[in-house]
Length: 310
Image (cartoon, rainbow, N blue to C red; front, side, top):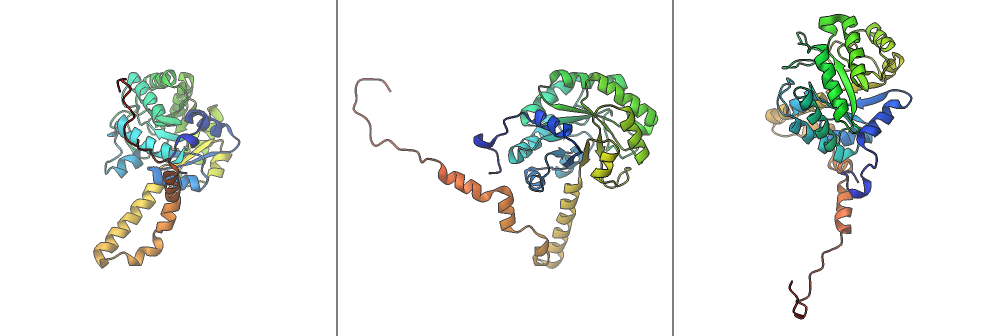
């Protein structure tokens, strides 16, 4: 069964499951998933968790990644992924949707929706992808207050503090911010847009909590494998928008072919078959569940009137 019902809901909160996966030996690999179907495919490939990217959510809605989404928008994505796959999700919380009180509201909403972890970054709105230039940083103490607020509000949610300080404050400044965020209560640190292995290594040697690496395409970080990040001292790695990029390129090819040739037969060998789709979403499991539900009994006439009200 795929979509979770009472007999197969996880008994342990998502945050606790996420933490246990971080604490295992090796590196926790978190591919991006932006809807229930992609999360099911990640689960079928034996990944233990997924990353829900703000850029992927925004793009799937036809919007740029500039902090436009609301808490409710994000919770819609969290719910479908958590319910479909049961995997613990690291959710991109952007800048926390406001100041400390807004961060507390975000944490509670994300936990209720089924998230396992949240990432909060130290940019100011309008925020940008961490691999773009001219990002505006929040004062370090303001970001620390958001982390403390998240820590206070959470029941089990794992808190990842992201710093985008490398561009403006250099590696020393980014490490100083990371240490402050750890003091404020962050469980892990995400140093964004590091551009060489030496920077990754120095970060891990000076910051003593689990670290997350971002292996995004078309950015500032050179391509490295999860094993290489692990050797550099990292406990988590994300591929935030890879799945959406692959899907979007396929959509582009499909629509161009359909417009040009008037049919899609040339692309059939690139498509997931009906049988493969049904297997992924558990179509026949739903049919079996439906047929197993006891049929309602319809009363056969009215009982004799014994004077009681009914």
